[in-house]
Length: 373
Length: 104
Image: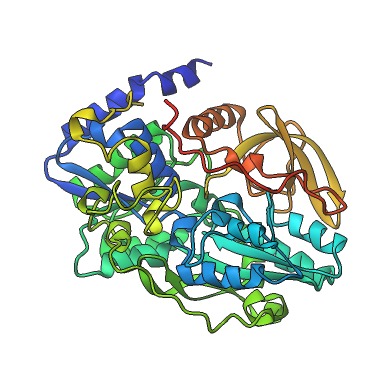
């Protein structure tokens, strides 16, 4: 496994870091969009390997983080009902809403369950025909095919005691919102590898062309991220703004077309709120009219619930690359992963939680510098 | 949570009208839906996200990605309880959030 060893011993990473230093002549700001990339960058100290003129800012790519408080409050209102079995992914059930996290409902006698796959909800529903099974369907494009299959099978199999509380978001509209902001600082993007394994990268091409911005679809390993940064900087230095694929060993331009086809049968694109950011037009999925009977918001009449977010939190500016966790006076003091005030602290893939987990709330001289890549 | 986890397809079968597989992730065996990569055969490696294979990859890529995810503590998805055919789960309460990097 020579290839594996080379990938991991830092030789390739050091070469890539040297090449970035050689190519870069001007200061550039690059945003990674995927929360897995953010986590990897902070854990491995990849930003410390880069020259001072290359700044990485951390985008809104953690679906758990950007699920709006309002949706968590709707989930609470549903999960509290005695005949409901409320299911979601473990990460999502731990995020605090206005009334605590969803696990806290267990202490009130509610039935809240972690599932591995949305399909687990089908088994639970068939085994409990006298109860209502509700799935909190969150995620980006990577998760949409799994969640779409649950709605599809529920309809095909006639499992009527299933419904979905849908809070699905899409990456390109968030990137467009960032680029359109008068305060935008981002000049190039690392695109999300596993999102694009599903959707491909065709839909990033109009965005890149319109804003003349480099978008390099990248993996999340240190070498992937460094190579992605190098590809973005080459484009910026040469005055290009194109979509390139660093992660060709996993994904193609077209993506997984079977998955895309089912997603479009079940969902349609519409407006969505993002925690910390607010409403972004046409930035998420809603169930199509044919699946309205499986919409938990309608079934449980929670559509009217509205929640405002705490004003002190600067998560919105962090998610848009305008600020860093250190710019927030609450970071590491009033706000930590056990008591998060907002989006970027609620999950390990959020920028604030990642900075906190790897000691970056401590004094700079105490900060642990990662062992490189 | 948008990362997919690589595993080896051990067996392929039909269940409830869907193409399914037993997939091995390190020492853990879990079920995955193959409807989006229906041509996949036993012995091949797939990237699996929340119980759905989304692409096939080669063995080297699978091994490297798995190790990278393990280092990041991004394999917790695999700890979710199994739901059997009777809709029963092995456990419900999860352990508190482990913050990677804290332990050492």
